[in-house]
Length: 315
Image 1 (cartoon, helix red, strand yellow):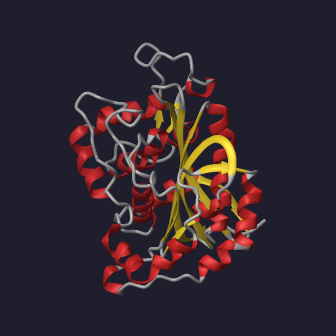
Image 2 (image 1 turned 135 degrees about the vertical axis):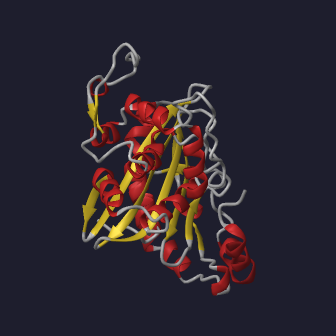
């Protein structure tokens, strides 16, 4: 399944082949080879200026955009593997790193708390961000990896910000598989796979979504295409806010988990607003040999890529 869609590929075939040819030296596997903030700053001042003028055209009817392939200037030698997709809400153009991974589906892990929060609020299962649930230690015993902040009562807001799994497992049992499938298909959320009798299907289970599908779902959510209530939209913005600078604000949610072979995979997905108007959505997917490597790099890596793509202000 392609994350670009028929319209965008038509645009690339008509006017964008020179963009790929000019940058056929790009890295194929999204590996990084120098401190990321320097690599992307250099790229923005140099290569990105040239790419910015390499416009591919397609008909407005096809609603295609320009694909800016950022692989050419990702160059950091670490054990971190990344895939990145940013979607411009106004032009529908995408900026990508590692085109071989951005269309592949992976477990969403705790990034699924975004649709989970939306569904809980829209279905009335949670009445607002202050919706309280008590932690039942017998029913939800603490695992050895649980941080202390999970091992207590939670509100919807605290559970979202802390990624407290048990709270959303309780919500999942109240939502049920049929209602989940209905909403996830309406959202276009990955494979929308929700098995019966599972309250953690997003944590390395059957549910899977690609980086580009993440950006499309987020675009629908923040651009008003899902017809969410104003209260739900405000709640999502409130709990997702990460950083603000020069009139721009980045919102998002992380998620991560251990793979069978011992590696970790993780995400940072979200959107950018400029003066309270959504301008772009993004999804960063990473694989690393350990959680510390993943956690220490994903936020600044995402901001560096967003700067390079022109969606976040320079420092």
